[in-house]
Structure formats: structure tokens, C-alpha cells
Length: 351
Image (cartoon, rainbow, N blue to C red; front, top):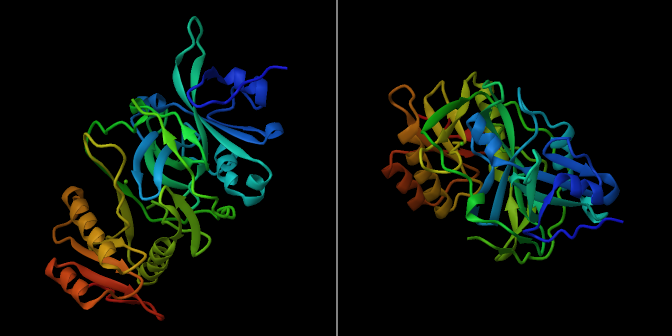
């Protein structure tokens, strides 16, 4: 019986993986292998670059550690949470994970000598980020028509060693662009998030609505990072979702933007732009000084790139009022403050 030891850094082919573990050789980049309880993700950043977007790759690590971005399946038209995309999202299911389900990441590694087949470098075992499994971005399809794509957020699995190189980093944008993201339609319900495992030991070998609002099923989930477990509050996404309802009730038009900056990887996506009042909002899930200071920096950064009618105003959206000195800080920067109350939002509309 053929065997294949999935050791990070292994160079192999999709055909060999399918021969040993099951799954299709030709079913796209997300391949379920039900018999072995595995899902194989095949990333090929060069495909995205060919069509004009560069989301795939090892992104800048955040407070939860390493992050690998992967654009979902579907070459033309808006991507849907069906087929391969649904398969990957469903790996968040607690029962599937408890039953031994695993996700394994491969990155294209050039052509197999003498063949048209692409070789694959095995990166390691990964999991979807339980707090924010994906983002939605605008990107051209194979027909050069702009559409919505899912950008899945992959983290190292517990105890995983990921064989990443500098070549795996998300490539920088070739030009600065600002795309309108129309009114959000809302994200689909996510599978039940799994309980947090023990803190992973991760070794790395190295050489920017209708951004859907950050809507999630529960108020809190548990994630982990090299410093240990911590609760990841989903309050920010829920806060924006509630505020959007307020804007809709007031008859306001709102959207967001997707900003790419020449020479930098990834995209910047502000939380919300109220087009009716010409106000750009940045939301935070807690009214701490550090959160508000971060929001101020983000708003000033976004404002440099967004071209809207003159008189753009800036505002932070918070679940509770901050301290008096933080309120003074916002006033000194001429940044408005909107806070949630039991009956609505204080400070809205921005005066």
C-alpha cells in the first residue's frame, strides 16, 4: 500500500496525495478526503497575481501569531460559500475536529520536471481562525470582471511546524488603489467554534462592505497565540452590525473601501463610511485608551487615501464611553465619538 509521510517541507504532487489519502486530483484548490478525514488546501499565489490580486500568502503576524491567507474557490463571479468554500468553513465544526478531522496546507512549487503537473510543497497542518475565519474582498476574476472573493484566514494547528519561506509572504501591491465596497448584506452563519486547545508551539522555517460586516454567531470565542489562550471578543463586529441597522433605519447610505498601497502587502478596509453624512467610522470592541489610540491612527491613515466629497469627518464607534481624558484626546484631534446605549447610539448623527 502506498505511503506518504506529511512532513513540512515535503515536495510532492496532488496525484500522490490523492493516491495515499483520497480526494480528487482535479477538484480545485480545496480538496476533501472523507475517508482519511482530511481537507487539503492547495495555494498558488501566482494564479491570483496573474489576475491582478495578491491576497494569498503568509501575512504579517498579528497578536494571535502567524496568519496565512488563502483565496477561496471560484474563478468568475462572486464566490459563494458552497462546495469547496463550504467544505473549508465547515472544518470549524467541533464534532468534525473531535472526530480527527484535519486541514493540510500545500503551496505550489513549480512544474514537475518533464510534466505539465505542478509540484506541491507541504507547509503543514493548519486550522481556520475561529474568531474571524474569512474576510470578503473585491478582486478580478479570470474574465477580468470585479467580483467578491473569500479570503480565508489560516493559523497553525496545535503543535504544528509550518515550513514557510520568505517567498511565501504576501507580495506587495503594484499600485495604490481604492475600491468602493457597497452596502453590506451580512455574513452567513458560521459553524460552532471549537474550544481552544492548549497553546500551540509553532516553529517556522523561513530563509482592505459590501465588505460584509464582521458579524459572528456568538459574543465571544476563544483563540490562542504564542502568549497563551485568550478570549477573543466579537463585540466589534456585533457593534458595527447594530450600528448599520441604525443607519438603515435613519435612511442613510453607507459602504466601506478596500485600499491597497503600492509596495505594501494586503489591503486596508475601514469599518464603515456613512455616505449620507460624509463620516468615516472606525469601531472598537472596548473603549480602552489603547483601542481608541489605534482607532485614531487608523482613521488618519485611511483619510490620506480616500477621495470623497470635501469635509470628510472622522468618528470612533465604541460600546461604552471612554474615560474623560480619552474623550479629550478625541476632541483634540477633532474626531467625533459615537457610543452604544440601551436605546440606540449616543452621538449619532455626528454634529
